[in-house]
Image 1 (tube, rainbow, N blue to C red):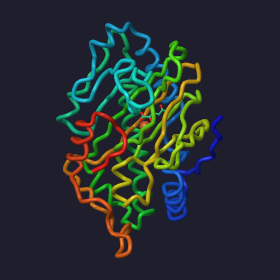
Image 2 (cartoon, rainbow, N blue to C red; image 1 turned 90 degrees about the vertical axis):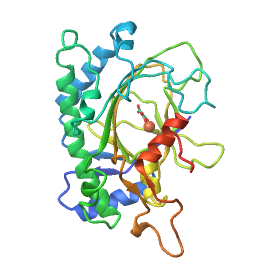
Image 3 (tube, rainbow, N blue to C red; image 1 turned 180 degrees about the vertical axis):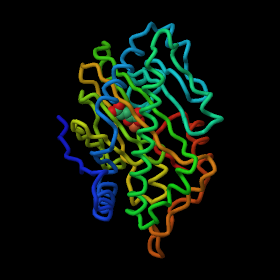
Length: 310
Ligand SMILES: O=C(O)CCC(=O)C(=O)O
Ligand SMILES: [Fe+2]
């Protein structure tokens, strides 16, 4: 039986940015995860996103496969990903749909959309969500900048100048007849930050000490209306491991589950070099500086989204 965690809560609409950024720092140092409330994304929009997502995943497989992922955008079927191959050889029991950047006028055309005849409100619903998440993500990143003793527009000028943002709709079927098959096996996200919305069905767990064996998993409870935010490997590297990119997974509970993850990353030409405020003579940078492009290429070669080890 896993223990239940109470993750720290961060209020995005707080009138006191300094104390909010202090809470963010503590949360990122202790857990690499926190809840985000008053994030500005309406409940009605989120309800229609989950409805539209369920409508898509309920379509026949041959149709979904006609939108198979290309250029990191589109549909990925059940078992096509195995985030932790040591957990189960079959792969992860989830299907997903990726939508890429809307801000960048060249890459926006790479997105694939289900036909308007089948799902007329699908595209506008997802586009509204992406814009809203981008707004919340930018606001949060200005507080994260303060939490690292950087100017509050540091990320606005670098990582968020032309951000690489992906929305991923996820569907975990209920019973599949296989034992111990994870919906998402153990991994840490490779990017900067992830904003996650779930439908309230349990299953998400984190392991705070990723280098300790045996692993201790703790359940992340659902908090109505709150996003779950986590730090990715790139941010861990940028902060010289002061902020943690925490191992997490989604275990089966026998219940069907939907979630929506928004991965907010810097553009390819962003140089990831330890922040001055995160190193000193006694604690020098642990990683070489590297362009984001190289991090994503190496991640693609590995074709997993677990810890980057170079
Ligand atoms: O569905 C979830 O709760 C987590 C998904 C996740 O960790 C991911 O897509 O990276
Ligand atoms: Fe993840």
